Length: 296
Ligand code: NAD
Image (cartoon, rainbow, N blue to C red; front, side, top):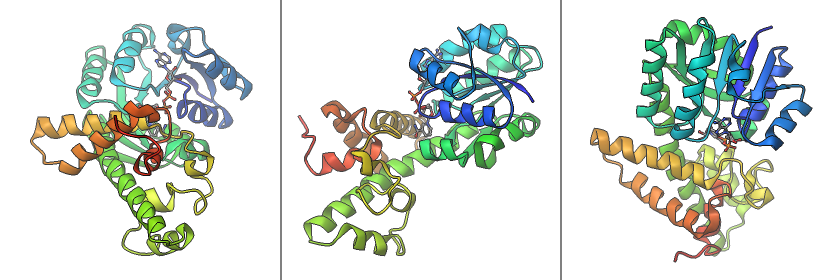
């Protein structure tokens, strides 16, 4: 049994922390939202009143926060209060600059830290089937791997500090584009009078096959667990997808990488969010394509 401090009990963090509790670890959780703390307590976790209380006794600290600014703010406190021999996994999806600055600060303080963003969504977090993509020192990766394995199925070492984030940003660039492609396909199929189940049957076994169709189908019916079946309740919000596409576009500009479809996907998610879709699941961009959310 390991003493773990877990900060950020949102859509992803809560089920991840609960899986650590189920594995027999002593987990103290902290979030700014009281309802998240209540939910964690109800699942057998211990509730910490603030970040210092959450991390002071922890052998392992895990963070799962929305954006770089939240990560920077939280780590100001975390670094001051952790034990010298703590192992830290920063699992949020954030910009590479923030990730590298957190690494540099950890290094300066002689602390061991990895960036370990995830893929797989809330379903993967609940089922402990997440993919972790990790940057940092390989020995720190190896030391934290047993804990990542409690929460995920595929754990991949990507290289030096920040390269886990690089893998995540590139992955979500592809995902944002492919989800819009899947929505356009299903929307056109409907207009042509082709049944969604039939199009799914074909696309899932043909060259259009992709995660956005087979695991996260953007129309209700073919994949009963996908957010389309609950009117696009998130899940992974459109606002989060917009954030990730901005991270990708920013990275593309910094490195002179060409990404015209990424820019287009970012513009579409931006319009969808401006028109009220920000809290819906990102697959709800289907509503926007169908005209349920009009561009202003
Ligand atoms: P979320 O908004 O549901 O949860 C984040 C939680 O962090 C919130 O409960 C918030 O109150 C808490 N928080 C913010 N600042 C805090 C602080 N200083 N101290 C304590 N708690 C604080 O977000 P999420 O959907 O769980 O996503 C978390 C991260 O994981 C994001 O970076 C996201 O891009 C990434 N991610 C999400 C998904 C998904 O499907 N939701 C999938 C892969 C990766």
